[in-house]
Length: 99
Image 1: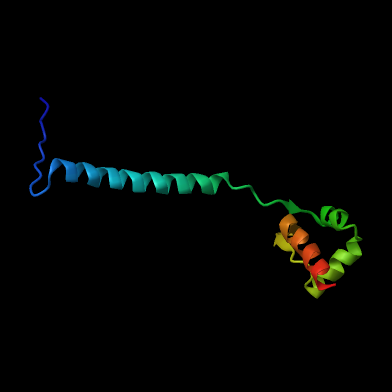
Image 2: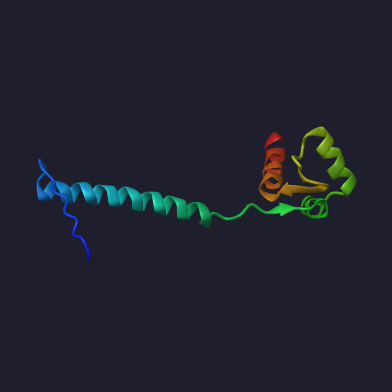
């Protein structure tokens, strides 16, 4: 046999209850949309040393030199070295602004 559960609410009008529920639902929808937008952000593109050298039109020796001088910011995963494409593009803009 099924049991019926009944909840009684005292001290609040039906309209106040409705507004309270709508406010909470709106907050949850906003949170859900924000979470979904995090997943829809474009992924950062990582480039190999060769790809970075080709993009910057420099040699691999220059890439190594710029790493040591701190001009470029390489990322390492195990023995793999990668560069963020956006950071390479920012570095080119900074060089142009210095002149």
